[in-house]
Image (tube, rainbow, N blue to C red; front, side, top):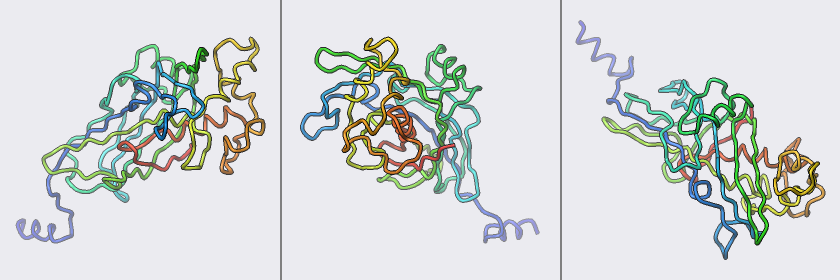
Length: 279
């Protein structure tokens, strides 16, 4: 009787596993974050207005990594972690063991403030700052052009869920190999913070408008570009062919613009895309 029931279950009344495998998620900031974003030369990517940006920190809070298919959840991250992707990577975010070996067509994750987050590879002081200030993303660095240097230290409180992640080479989700391990990279794109359009695939990186905002602070031009100074730059004051919003609502100044761009920093397996959902 028991043998008959087992056979019946494998005919379709109960799902049978083809074995199990493991999935490890990593995060990585690529050369633009780890090394620098250069001035554009020829057709190579870079700042079209001649600036170079080097990050000192690029801190993100990664949470809610989930592997699922339809309404079946294979695994979900329970502990948010703080990573500085300026440090050499990739680094491990989460490892899931003994998942059913099959195709799971939905990967999602979040970059959001989490007061209970612990360090992934970020310095303890940065973890504490992220939690105390309620930040999800912190970028610290310098921009240089000729003999001019501008510093920035920008913290963002954006809460973004990245859904339906898909790689152009490997497709959506992840295939768990039987008795093996698959690695999935959650890639962070630092160049996105400097794009001059929220929608266009031909957006260019620029820093001139940000550098010019320095003089708008209370202290005048002090070599430090703050978010408050960016907020003083109305987008209508900038060249008409730059900083297009594509109709995005509530994006009226340069701070709003950069904050919107922060939500596009999360990617999947290099150049793969996710659908960012503001929460």
